[in-house]
Length: 399
Ligand SMILES: [Zn+2]
Image (spheres, rainbow, N blue to C red):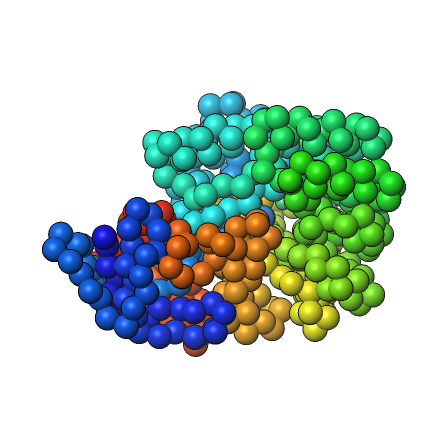
């Protein structure tokens, strides 16, 4: 048994810290008590002055993408070995940043599955991974640069077959694109919808029949409405969502993954910005303002939001994922407690793992992080974690 003693332990449901001791055995939390009751042979770690929270869950990453590779063609020009190494590095950094679970919304030719297997076997460090495999889309002008990421499908039958290909490779959920990527060329028509309601519904039903949830990428309002009508489980980005669509999402319990970080990471980075064409800078500047307004409206409508960064996109670094929590508070106006809930229990619920992840409770996995100051006072404390534990094993514990 390991005891973490003297720390302030966060209760996600209550939204408050209380000084408690956490007893951990066989990778799980066994006890949560006012004071430790160590037996002979137990290891006691003094966490006095620390603020302990459940490990963070990022529900939208791309571990196979290297955010420092600029120019979309360069993503696909990497060798398989290089992509595998980038993925392993991304997994290690993500975990060190306190992200103990990720949902990867588009890998690269299933190399992320190999890395997941190694993480599970304990030969590589990394978070728990829920993977989509390739993302499903129609063939678009920008797709050629991302050849390892896409699986093309158009009709309902093709969509079902594409979903089955991902499941056969070990996908935990299905990722579908219904509008453009937004990174794509000027000729990309962001408002175009890729599928009909019948086609998308067929994919959703088929995925659900196989026990997989469906994440749907949509920026434009037409795509957002389509996704809601088809009954997807989560909507990614939601840039042009309007009040009516958000109310329908809230009613249907569809989760919104805002990915506030992705556009800001690009246009706030001078190196990346200098390399971007003017039309793309204008597109993002405009979209970022609209996106913020949509996310504020989503909160007002009661849409469940979870944390997702789109880490791996240009300038959006693996391991810096907690910046999304800061943006949820600073840009969207969520309280720190709401942002923490989105980044813990909210993500666990979307993944169907609320029984084992997302809060510090007996029986759950011992995925625990610690900050040096109270994140309810300043959410940026999550960007300076000094302790990360996954499965009851200490990943880092800085002096
Ligand atoms: Zn993404």
